[in-house]
Length: 118
Image (cartoon, rainbow, N blue to C red; front, side, top):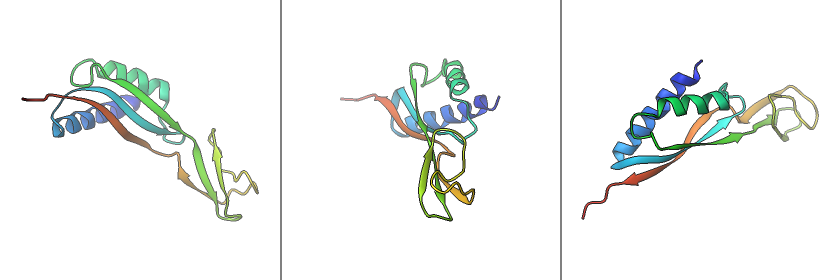
């Protein structure tokens, strides 16, 4: 289950960003997860809940924005958005397409609590 290694890397990235911003806690981890990323959202959520228990992410909520597959057709020039894994053009049914969005998992935003010194 590669979701465990993905979550480990995600938490490490969150910890580094928190340290860079003098944060004492992370309250929210917001990611964009593409339909072709190869990551199963429910398994990712379970892995996150398991691995966040210790460290700065322990109270963080994982917010996933699921990204539809967006393809462009090389034949008719139009774009199509799919909610499933389908690379056929929705306009002319050509398979001569390329992916514009929906392949990646991207850390979009963190909710940070910072220590303020007076």
